[in-house]
Length: 278
Image (cartoon, rainbow, N blue to C red; front, top):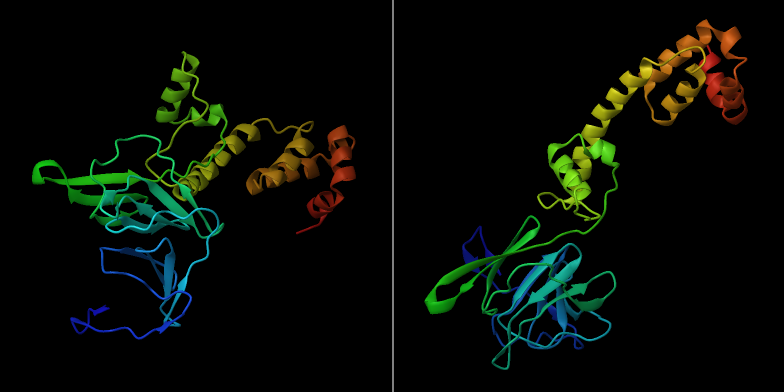
């Protein structure tokens, strides 16, 4: 271990589990940190874990077939998986890209959608940034090549076309679909799902206000009870208060409407809340 404060290398004491004695011949093994542990895959077909607090090495359990032991590969942690890319096995170059899922304890092959795989895939310098893995390696004729692999979450966020049409980029894609393209999804590649949902959170509040303003113009004695219920469902407080004011000002007429009777039957607590004096 290297200490930044003292600018010196020091040995880290540890207790070796006899079932998981770390067997590394110093052949360019990669490692990655997940939580309080360091993970290394190397000269054996096993993934090793070193716990920083307990100072203990152990073999990480797995199900199914494990990848071939190797050196000089790119190893990194992303999401809840440890990834192994390329490397050397007894002098032969491995061209596989595999992942260990900590949740299911299984190894599997990573499905790559597009792009050209690097020609030489061993002796990497790799770094993970945001949702992409960058690798720097020696290419043809002693040149240096930088490659990027981007992770796509491949999760769906459903939205109505009428709402998506408000955005020029979505509008263009939807119109292209109507003209002959039949892609069932719009790919969002420049942000994560979590970021996209946060953005939607701000936009939805703005859209909700626009809808409330539109509906507000249709509040009448006949529609007040229905809109009151709708406003409650969508937490449009200002719209709900305006409906309540309309109902109370015309209670004798509104109370006889079918919409109010249905509201009283199905959501009496909401009616009582409206009738309760402030």
